Image 1 (cartoon, rainbow, N blue to C red):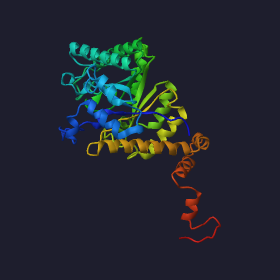
Image 2 (cartoon, rainbow, N blue to C red):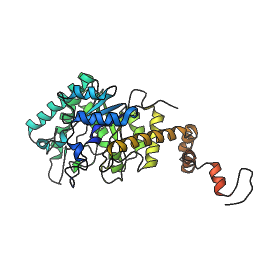
Image 3 (cartoon, rainbow, N blue to C red):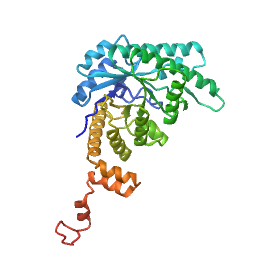
Image 4 (cartoon, helix red, strand yellow):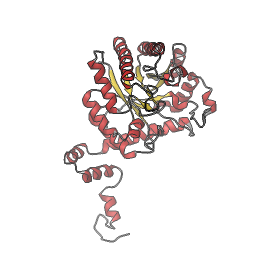
Length: 358
């Protein structure tokens, strides 16, 4: 067994789970709970399966309720705060890119306040700029939009570095803005490199891989683990699954099973977790029992991770260097049960070579 990678769970999995077709949410009782109550329910339901939690700032966690949340967590920690301005009506036209300079400044100040809170409790900070983009052709002055975005993100990233807070940028292609500016991994890497070029302190800036966001783009999870690790940008994981057309945030391993097994193997190869990195669970159980769905995700991920550990790394890497897909899948399916014994049984051969089928 290799190192155990700790985990964290987004508390939003325990909310009302609303959609535009069900704005009240499929869990109306949860929608009226306080964050403290959600935290108690999650801690009690998940027990030792979870190491910590993540919260949106300022909607789910803020200066007023943080001490109550910490008390409800007991021995669990707050691993990360995530900027949550995408759901605030005043930022409908963007946060860092809002056409109103006063609102851009307000968004930056709120972000800095969140970073201050993260610094005070020893948490990381996630920036997912889901509202920074546009909905129509001709709507946006692209050059100006990108200038505002880079300057705003650069200012808060620089501030976070001064405070000793690690920031994880997270991309997504669409929703709530139909065309989010930072909508694929290439653009996310571009942002980091551009901020560095512009003179901002990016020493504590890395990326958060939200698996469903990559899946929606047709981006290969395991490949980007390798790319980000090479660049020193592999900061965090948001684990989930989905059909690939929407941000489903389904249970881990329910879909894209092979991709999930492959990302587990690649995370092991690059030594993910050795420096305290975690796998965060970003889930949205629309109609399922929330605690049960999160528990199932954690268990399924741990099982998939254990399967990946059993794949012969040396033989796999040798086959990969030859681009030998057949041997690669032989090694993968051996740990899934398609071994020599299964082959012999399928062919009607026992270990003594009786030659009878059936």
